[in-house]
Image 1: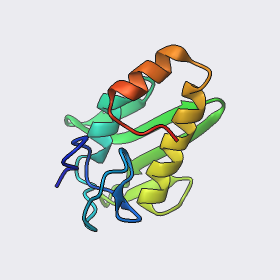
Image 2 (image 1 turned 90 degrees about the vertical axis):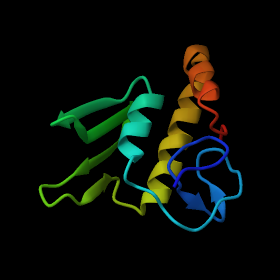
Image 3 (image 1 turned 180 degrees about the vertical axis):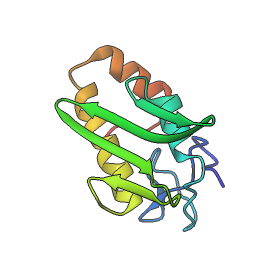
Image 4 (image 1 turned 60 degrees about the vertical axis):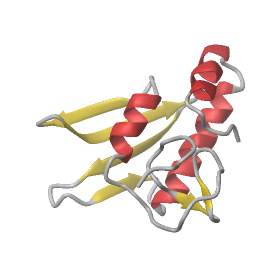
Amino acid sequence: MNCAICQAPALPLDGACVFCHSPIGAEEDTEELLDYLAEKIPTAKVKRYRGSITDLVVETRGRSCRAYFTKKNVLELVPPVHLTAWVDLLLTRLSDAAAIDPDGRRAYLRSGWALR
């Protein structure tokens, strides 16, 4: 399931899409999240195994957010918080970086995500 507005994987935060803040249901969709983030964040570093992304790292202003699949195919997050909170933190850090980088801000706004 994707958000009807920004087409991001469904990740609700307080009843709204964590990416664009439009109203959304309560179901989380983590299946395509790493692919979606890698596509939308040009600075993301990814590792793949047989075509699928297994590790995604985004560094902004000296801080990093990492999401990776363990050998048992469990999604692990660094920092270790709930998935929606991790995405919200990532978007907040990207927004902070975009405040001082006009190219990053343009790319971020083109994605359809709400700036924090």
